[in-house]
Length: 282
Length: 233
Image (cartoon, rainbow over all chains, first blue to last red; front, side, top):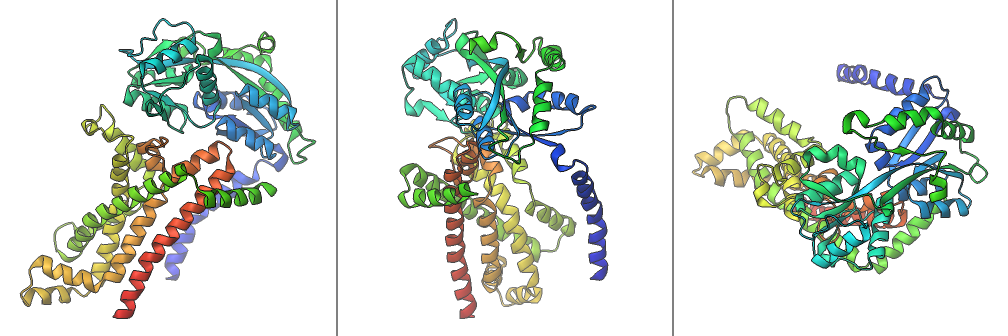
């Protein structure tokens, strides 16, 4: 019996030591908690930027990638130090309610309407996303929605509003999952869906879905940074958040983001436009 | 801190006023898990007993495999089931992906090794001579096994409880195979994940409470049956 316990202890020791070391390294105020959306992390750009920030820096960024809704919630409870999100109306409310400040829109990518190649709703060639949505509803084609109050879901709801119709409930699948899962479901069910271009590009090889509508101004997806208000939450790492904020708005980030994805997909996944017209276009 | 208490309170009200959607989620959770447990019991109990009672080469390796299966990571099961059932997969023709049937399949894969493994060790705890005696008294093999199982009903019920517990609380596999589609494949666990991701902690807490309560009720029912049998003996 004692021997068994000893064996277990020996086996477990390295694990505990590993923990202890990992925990000991970053002193508490060195850690920056970034609340962001899965769509940012899924592209891999976040990891690249964080690695660049860590190089020579004194802070460690811990990224929590969740839906925009939950990311905002993390900011509202003072759990996060800085937000990187894409849900403009909510962001404005978040700042107006005093939870955050210095909201800065700094990059965007765009959404595309995906559908099966035979295109039963005949939306191909439609310039306006709302027009495409109206056709999908009119044709009674299947549509897969995120249904999770994420930034993407909110954009989709706005487009249905603009189209002035609602799809029939039995033709409207509310998946309640992340972007890649929703695109996968649409692919399986030969349905239409709204997806961000980077997710589409990264999954393209496995999909039979095609881009059927793109390029509409309404499909632009603008990402913003918000600093969580340290006056409201004294526990927030304000200095660290500020350093990461400045880094993300620096020329260095501009260079990295501008090139990111070009090699693999032939075009950058994000268009970096800070400082630029994104503020005016808001 | 206040938001936790608020969540609990609102969760409780949601529970009491429970709307149609919550009920349909509860129904689906119950249906999928109970059905999957039934299938797993039908496969697992006889299989476990046979492996325990029979002598055959590589028996230890087979038992190790069953024991490994008891710890199958549900997400891996979900992934495998999803690949099998996808339109271009080998079982794609069934059209089971993103349906409750597909979820049952994934859960059967998770629960069957648990029930098999526990039945197996229960059967091994029984003196083998008991089984042999049945045979010499003229019982057929299945008849003898049945008598042994009756002797072991306490442990077998424990196996059923464990199997059910492993799937009612499971989220990874049903998320991947079911797709968490509203009104179709959304169950308590996946709905809880969704509510959490949306930052809607009240809803998440309410669903979590329902799940806990449900699991408790079912386990209590099974335990009552089990303990009654214990007293009867």
